[in-house]
Length: 184
Image (cartoon, rainbow, N blue to C red):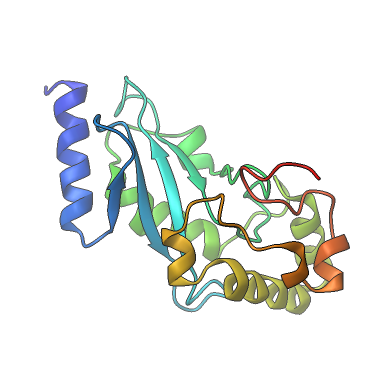
């Protein structure tokens, strides 16, 4: 059996060879960003997100930590931190899975089939259950504002200001800020 560090290298190389844009955060292979495109046949289609991945020392025996850097409207993604509530990653991870599975299977499934009964964003979950059309409209608005290709390459400090939000979005929930944004 190969060591966790060899497996980490193999999985990262496999991810890079799968045409994903990968940007290393530091000299090690444990933290990096991946450009992720919303799946076809979903309201997230056309959106591009920067995903932060942190591999624990015990990877692949322990799951990677996955988070959206630019804003996404989804019941199972915390709007403030970008943390993902994803059962397969958080609870049922197996060393049989690799990083390509995360980006080709797990995240697309999360966006295609949100679970409003286990929300990290209660407002998105409630809207999805109450009015699916309004939920999908809000998802598309967020994609247009926060998930353009140039947003996936931008650091979280380059956030749009509140002036760019509609009145409904400003007051829709108390946690509209993006990762790294200070309270006024």
